[in-house]
Image (cartoon, rainbow, N blue to C red; front, side, top):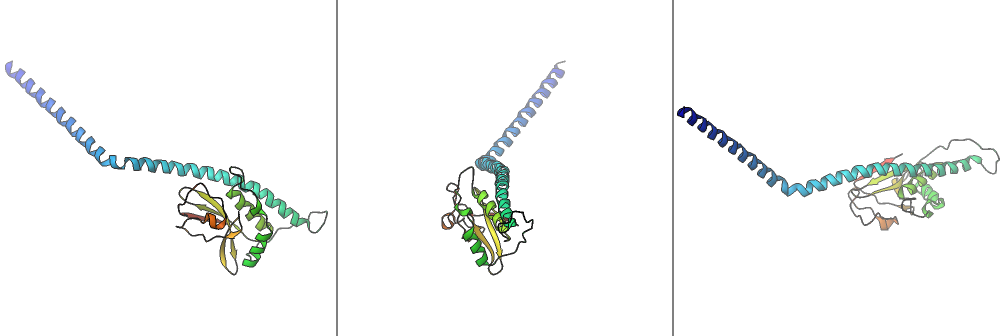
Amino acid sequence: MDDLEELIVAIGRVVLGLVALMGGLVALDLAIYLSVTSSTFGENVAAAYDGSYERGYDQTYEVGYQEGHNEAYRKGYSKGYEIGRGSGSKEVVARRVKLHNPTYKEMMEFLAGDETDSNPFIKGEYVCFDFAAELNNNAEANGLRAAYVRIRAKEWGHAVVAFETVDRGLVFIEPQSDKDIPLVIGEPYPWQQVGANRPMNYDDAVAEIQIIW
């Protein structure tokens, strides 16, 4: 009987030893994990924040663009309606405006007569997306093929207009000033140079240019 008790006690000690060993290994693994991840924890949080910011920005960007585009489309349609009426005719002349790529001079003459750039910038109501959509629609109502251009950086979004001129190639125009834009991926947008309202104090470089014809 004594031998049996001693055997049970010995087995108990072995089990307790194994439990202690396993607990030590778990603690060691946890310590190693924390030592490895602690240095990058702040970076991981920042990355998660940036990812969430981008997803939220994309959603609100699209909603804002659609609202601005719809309003500009209405105004552009009105312009086309006026063209279709002809000179003083009481009957509406239904016709489809045929678009063409303008010369640089033709583009500049159109911009000189267009009044989109004279519209006031109203934060939350009439912003860069509205300027670009209205100028795009007015150009096409006058027969000039134009593109709505989305510009994206890490911290901001912007919109301009582009024309594929027959003599100078692709030209980007800032709708708030009608100025030719030296637009380059990897370089900051020239807000002050082209007379555009700048979103806060962001200076990060242009990351994406999306041209929509």
